[in-house]
Image (cartoon, rainbow, N blue to C red; front, side, top):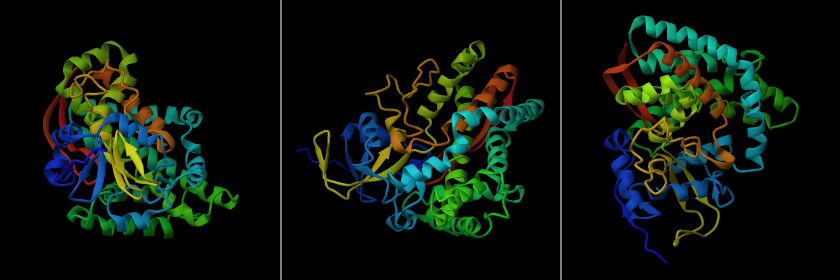
Length: 389
């Protein structure tokens, strides 16, 4: 039986949030399982092991939550993200109804019209912040309108979502600073985002309608709002912004995409592979389990490092190179298995709509200035100012 290598690296300190890739490479070299001494959990840094774990919910359980801090995990047990079948299946079937491919076709014209409007505006400006003036608008417009929580809360939604991602990490300063906003959002979901005060045709109202039909317990509805607000905003915004940054740095790849629009889906996959917006979630072992000859005990908390897996040289040749002809549709940025991202069709639709229109109008992106986002659960840019030609 192999000894388990120990790492003293802290994937949640500022330096690692800015550039985790050297740490990931070191962890992959150390072995299939590494004990992260700072936070007392194990990590799987390699692609094959992360994918296998994602496909095996019975062994790698989400029911004791998927964050790092044990107190936060205790508070979140039972939400969709932090559940296993059959509970997970029940909640997900209700949550996923408005996000099915057939429903996506219905809202495609709305998304395309909004994308036209946004791209017209930024192209006319010639210089813009790709994070706040381009990437934010489509997910915000879609979520505010379709979830039906009201225009008045649009500004707060981004703050709330970022705060919820910050408490995904250990109880560091960022975590502490985020807690008041998390509590504010939970209070809003409990007291304000209720029937009579939300759009009766919106996704949030559909949760309560499903509860009235006996499909899920009514007390689940407020926390299930998290599933519409948290994953659908920052992740897509960061994905769009990182894609623009990658094309600015690799203009030859932008030329390829402009010449052949069939590359757009592959460009989205390659961007999400190389800059994964959500670098990790944890799972808890339901039994003693062996991973590539390494024995772990029942109850061990294991971090699945998507950001590392997506750059594993065992899986992707020259993994740090951005290459939109690579076609990495098997990347793990959306997860896999039972917990695969329920909103991935919506995210792809939003990203495709923007890339199509930008490819018609923009020959080059030049980065003027950039500011990275430092968040315990997310990776990407807070600001990315670009000029276009």
